[in-house]
Each structure stands twice: as C-alpha cells, then as structure tokens.
Length: 139
Image 1 (cartoon, rainbow, N blue to C red):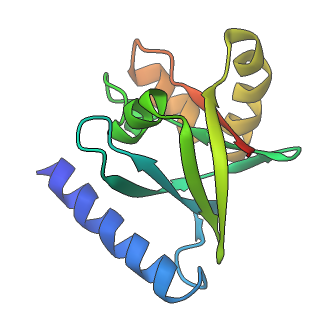
Image 2 (cartoon, rainbow, N blue to C red):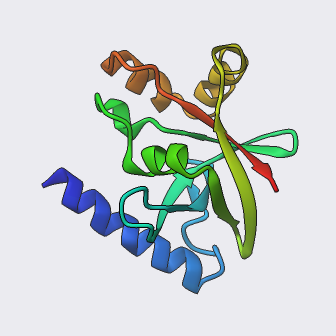
C-alpha cells in the first residue's frame, strides 16, 4: 500500500508544481524540489518524479535513496538506461545528461547532501546498497 500512496502523492505534487509554476511544491523540509523526467527503459514513455536537489557548481545533484529501501528507485534504473533527462526547476525545463557519481565523486558529494538533508544518512544506515548520487549536467 505504501507504494501506491507514494505514487498518488507524487502525482499530486507534480500537478501542483506544474500548475503553479512551482509556487507550490518547490520545497520540502527546506530543500528545493525539481521535477525529473526520464524515459522508461521498458516502455519508452516519459515518467516524471518530484525529487530533492542540490547545487554543485553548475551541476545539480539528486539522490536515489528510495527511503533506504534495498532496491533502487525506478526513476534511477530508467536514467541509467537512458541518461538524457529533463529537469524542471521552477518554470524552466532543462535538457540534461545524468551520470552516477563515481566512488571518488561520491566521497566528496555525500557529506554535502547529508548536511543539506540528514535523512539520507538515516536511509543509508537502513540499507546494504550504496545509495547513488546522480549528477545532472546541462547538455
């Protein structure tokens, strides 16, 4: 049931974000939110998910935490299969190329994202998988 509830809330969040030009839904727990659109690896259909994001210079960072679940979120599996994504930040839709941070990059980035949102540290302690940090670069 939790998965269906999350999908329902996510769809409401998406609609409010788009209808209001991000006046509603642009922050959660003080952290900015973007809408990430990926191409489904099986269906080829566009899928959009609201996600927390962080700035790292000119790049944006997102975290594939899934709340510490043992498996990766679907959006992450989709962007690994097709790294070209669209990030909507406010009203702006940005064509971006995604990549998973290398171990070296993650060692620098992980403390930054945990400092900005401590929940990620808790999520990492709940799972054996290394939670990926994804780097989004403008195309």
